[in-house]
Length: 413
Image (tube, rainbow, N blue to C red):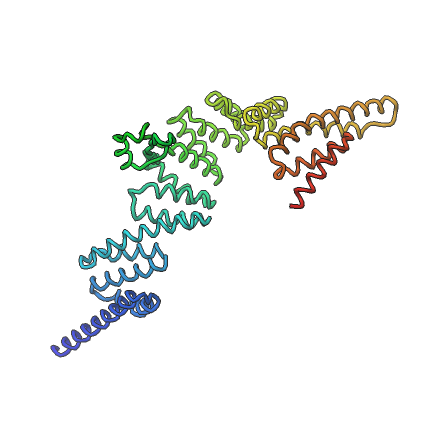
C-alpha cells in the first residue's frame, strides 16, 4: 500500500513538474517575442494545466494566454483571461500593469477603427473598455454613437438605455484665455487656466461647461424605437423626455417626426407650430411644415412655408426643389384638360388659354431653378435639365443653349 502511494505521489509530482516546465518554456518563448511558438506550446498543454489542482500554475497560464491574446488584438479574450488570473499575489503587480495597458490599447484601437469607418468594431471595443472601467461612462457613449453610425440599432438602443439609466450628461468643463498679444481667444488646459488667471499676459480667462447630451440620448432612444418598429415605445420615450425638458426644440421635433412617420399629420403640425414659437428663425422648421402641409393637400400653406424657409436660409436647396415640385404639380391637370379638348373654335380658344397658363407656371419656376443652380450646379443636374426643358417649351433659345452647354460641361468632368 505504501509503495502504491509513493508511486502515485511520484507520478503526480512528475506530471506537475512537466506542466510547469512546459509553461516556463511558453513564457520564455513569449519574452523572446516568439508569440506563435509560445501559443502552440500552451495549446498542446492547456487542458493538462487547467485540470491540475495548482491554482498558481493555472493563474500563470491565464496570464500568458491573456498576454498573447492582447498582442494579437483579441482584446475580449485577453480581458477574460486576465480576470481568471486574479488571486495570485505573485503576479498581482504584473496583472495590474497588463490590465492598465490593455485598457489603453483597446481605446487606441477603437479610435483607429472608428476613424477608418469600421463603426461596429469600434463600438464593440468601446463597450469592452467601459466594461473594464465602468466609471468612464464616456466610453459607453462612444459605443452608442459608433453603433448608430454602423447601423447596429439593437446594440445602440441597449447602450443608450444604459446611459439613460446612468443619467449621463457628458458635460465637461472647458477653459479659455485670450493672449493680450494676439487678442484671439484659445482653449487651454485646466492647469494653464490656474496659471493664466494670475498672468498679466492673458485676459478673459474663463471656464465654460459644455451642453448636456442627455436630451440627445432620449431623442436617440425614441428614434431607435421608431426605427426598430416599436412606435409606441418611441412616443413614450420622447414624451418622458419632454416632461423633463418641455421647451427643448430638438425633443419637440423628435416627437413631431415620429408622429409624421405614423401618419399623424395633424399632431405633427401642432408640434412643429409649437417648436416655431420656441425658435421662430429656424428655417428647417418652416421647411418641415411645408412638407406636411403639402402632404395634407394645403398647397398654398406649403408654398408659404417653403418661401419662408428660403428667406431664412437662402441656400436651403431642398426648399427650392420642393417649391418647384409644388408649382409643377399644377401642370398635370392643365395637360389633362388640354388633351381632352376637341377642335372646335371655342375649344381651340380654351386650348390657347390653357397653354398660356401652363407657360406661366413654367416661368414661375425659372427664377427658383436659376437660384438653385447658382447655389450648386454640380449637385443639381436635374434642375438644369428641368430648366432646359422649360426654355425649350417657352421658346427661349438663348436660355436653352446656356443650360445645354452647362450640362455638357458638368458631364465632361
